[in-house]
Image (cartoon, rainbow over the protein chains, first blue to last red):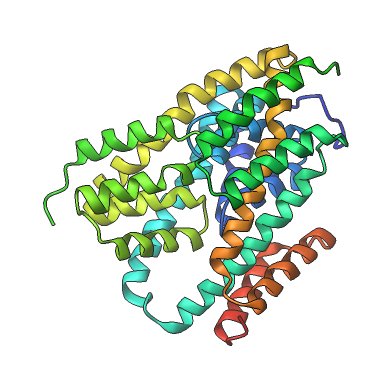
Length: 184
Length: 175
C-alpha cells in the first residue's frame, strides 16, 4: 500500500498539519530539502515524480514555491480545509519562531560564537539543497531535450545571472511546445 | 524613523507577491529598494542582518518579510508584511490546484508540467550553486558542502545532526 503511485488516499487534516509543522520546524536554510524528505521519503504521500510536478506548478505561480506546493498537497488530500490546515502548520510556527529569534538576536547576536555557528550551519544547508536537486534530477527522462532545457536555465540564471523572467520567457514557450508535440 | 504607513506597506507587498513568479528571491531586490532606498525605514546593513537571521531560523527563507514587519511596527507590522504573501497562494494556487486535480491528464496541463520540469530543476541547481558560493569563502567550506552532499546521497541520517556538526565546525574554527 505504501508503494502505490497513483491512488490518492484521504489524509486527515491533523496529519497534514503535523507533517507540515514538522517539515517547517526542521527547515534550516530553506524548506525544499525538508519538504521532499517529509512528503516523498517519510510519509510517501507523493512519488518523486509527483513532487516535481507540483513543485513545477508552484514555481510557475506567484508566491513562494514551497508554499504553493503546500497548498496543492493539502488540497489534493483533504480539500480546501486540508489546504488551510497545511498552510497553518507550514507558516504558523515560523512566524512565531522568527520573531522569537529577532528578540534573541537583539541580545546575543553580536557574540562571535553565534556568528561562527551560523556560518557553519549555512555551509551545511547549501549542501542539503544541492543534494536535493541531485535526487530530483533523477526523474528527468533520459533524453537530450529536457537536459538541454535544464542546462540552459541553469546557465542563464546561475552563471550569466540574467533576470529570471527573461530566462523563463525565452525558454518556457519552447519547452512547453516540445512537450506538447511529443507523444507519450 | 518616521511613523510607518502600514496600509501602504501592506498594499506594496501585496502587489509584489502577485508578480513574484519564480519565488521570493525574485522580489528581494525590490523590497530592498522600497524599504531602504525610497522610504529609508531600514539601513542596508539592518536589512542584511534581518535577512540572514531569517535564513538560519527554521522555516521558509521568506519569513524575513515577517521579521521586517515586526521590526518596523511590532505585531501589526508583521501582519502587514506576512498576510500579503498568503494571498496569491490561497487564491490562484487553489484554483490551479483544483483544475489540476480534476483534470490531471488535460493535455495542456501535462505539456506545461512536463515541459517546465527540467527548467525547474535547472533553476534549483542555480540557486544551490549561488548559495554555495555565497556562504563559502575557502576550500574548507566547499569541502564541507560537498561532504554534506555525499552523506545525504548515501546515508539516511537525520540532517539535523549534519547541521549541528556544521555549527560545531564553525565554532571551533574549522570552516
